[in-house]
Amino acid sequence: GKRLFVTGDLDYDCDLTDALYDTDTDMVIAEGAHPSPVLLLDMLKDRGAKKVAIVHIWPVKYPEIYTAIAKHKDIEVIIPKDGDEITV
Image 1 (spheres, rainbow, N blue to C red):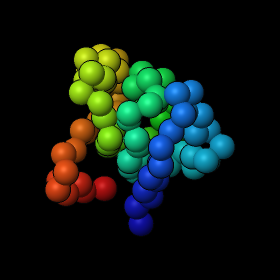
Image 2: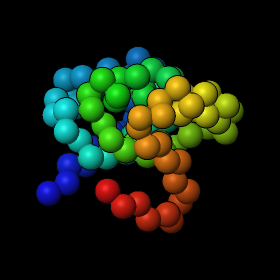
Image 3: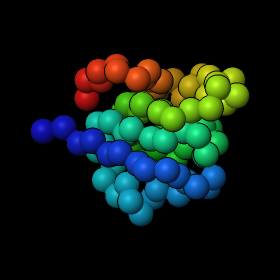
């Protein structure tokens, strides 16, 4: 089977290391309005996430998110829109 991890609203430091205990997560759906995208992707990479969907994003954060995505070419990052379907 596939493993999916979904966050709720995250704090700015977004420490998910205790919650995301499994290092074999196929996909993480993470809230992106509050945490730093770079910090979020750094942490998820360290936990072995293969694919990340970042949702609930303020438009002002798009440049920072694109910088974080460029830094983490080993993680598939998607930014879905309302109504999009995502394959795990």
